[in-house]
Length: 115
Image (cartoon, rainbow, N blue to C red; front, side):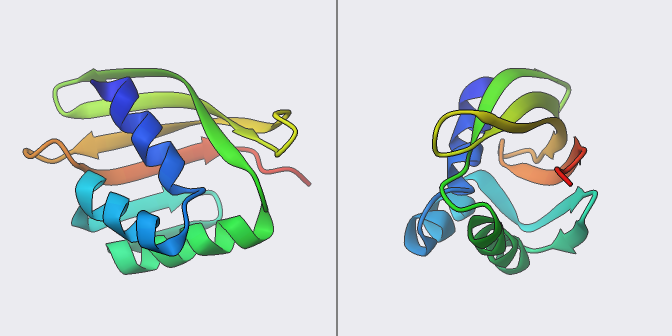
């Protein structure tokens, strides 16, 4: 289950606004928090804007989930950011908490962005 949820979440980062909003509502709690080396935010609206900005900064890029593990409402995934030619831009991992309903409620991303 956890890898499938991570894969669904990863696709949101490359989705158009309509699909992104629908999928975020299905996969994330309304008060989701997100942190990575570049930002800290909360709420689906701010997160959606951050994803839209990601698409502008990394056009055509997408996330490939390599592995996901879960236990006791916590989950960890390793991933690659892929460019449109399916080459790795950089690697990272993300840790998340799951709400009682199985949606993601908190993310912490770890990666070294490219120079």
